[in-house]
Length: 478
Image (cartoon, rainbow, N blue to C red; front, side):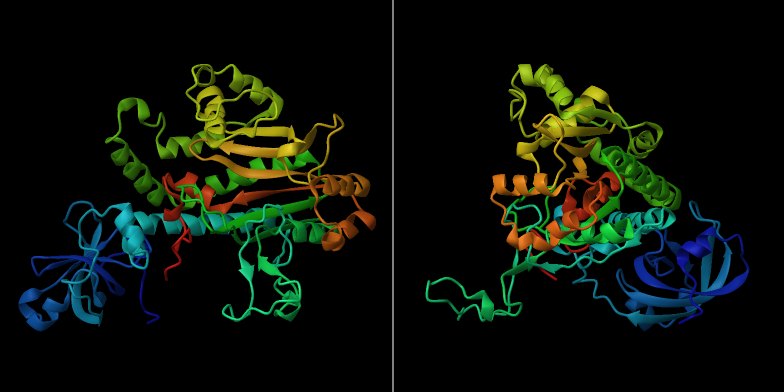
């Protein structure tokens, strides 16, 4: 097995006239002579030329689309168009047969909806091969970014007793027999008999635990799965998704914005460099898709141009109050084209408002700051005006909010007062409040939804297409 060479390496090499072994899956087999072989290292196939006159006919019949094969042969310059080298096969071994009558991925164009139904096989298509190689690079670049800046990677719990957002959209974790749940004298579930001795759920965020780490290690980040039991059947929501959540001690809202902008630019630049071929493929795919749309609905920039544009421009920074003034006076608002009209200060911005600011008004990524405290979480630092908090959201074209964060409230009395106002039980978060009792300091952090980042970099339109096995209402297959 160790003698195998990946197809990407062969296609990039300048060497020829050598014997090589390649293994992969058959994309097509033409004229009993030409195999297009792919191993997932690149979207490009290598052509294997078969001496069919001297090959067992029974073996030739088994070389079908989807079959896994091993080829030993001689690498030679290719005379065919679009390829520099090809392999003249000496021996071919079938590693895994694929029944052509039953294999669902025949060499033709398949809809994304159909491919979602066979998510266990969609990795074998060019589109999903490109998406998941880009996803890998983005994940690697995130770790690289934080490593270069001295952050500590902290694993925060997946099973927790806290609901960080206070939204109540959690998945419960229990080992009760659901047909015989123990109840107390009051008729309520007796969680003292459960595995953890209390009610527990899957995490909605690693932030609160991340803050505990930052209060000793200075700069930490988490990168792990999070869960929301939100009954949303949209192209932007998942029940299971991945979040990157840095927390930084001795940092304010400006440090937070600077770090988030630097992170986004770093990982986009990394993907453009490392996945040039995949992003070019996805750019062309998007152009072909947009040909079906009316001219006025097509993007002004190609995918590659849009990514480069984010690198070349400083993100526009403005306050929520300034944004509300812009939106109130905007043409879509005045002509009642927004689904949710912006009537005044205090409005919770919707995706359509965020996208207007980014795509129509400023025409570049935007960072909004200083939101009304009523529409933001309890842990955000209260500004001196008594009305707003030191929150920041980063808005991207086509996506809307991609990052949400804030300077955290480090003053114990202010934090407790806010928790009382919102009815958040202080006794359940005693451990969180302890960080404000013992050596509190200004600190800040943010959350970056990884799938939204992948969505942006790949140009895909549905978040279910950028995670290997999407989880959403009424769907938890594989």
